[in-house]
Length: 142
Image (cartoon, rainbow, N blue to C red; front, side, top):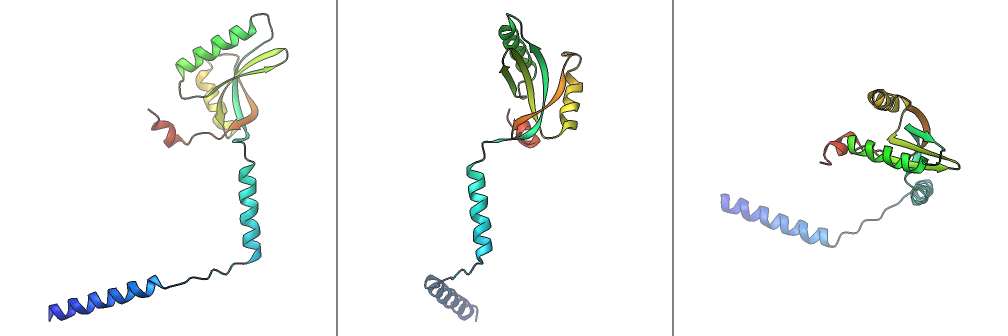
């Protein structure tokens, strides 16, 4: 009896496989869905990886040695906080060192409070930021 049951199951599965090989699927979609999909694709092609957010500015100077000072402060910060992005920004005649890529002001303010003992003149600024890594990704970058 088990043999007959097994044979029936095998025959049934073979028939299903034969029928699925010849199957054809027609997709009918509305024009609105196609238009939205095309808009989504085109907007993502133009995305440069930057969005509105916040950074913490830890240095600002326009003196003769400001470039050297900015580089030194950036290197010092990067050695203390290797997982936080650092940026030297030059807008004539000033050099600025900004750190972090924060989506909200409160995130930037929280980080700024951590570094105030080391950088007492630091403050939060609105800036174009790169898409920040998720906390899970940062913890697994070891």
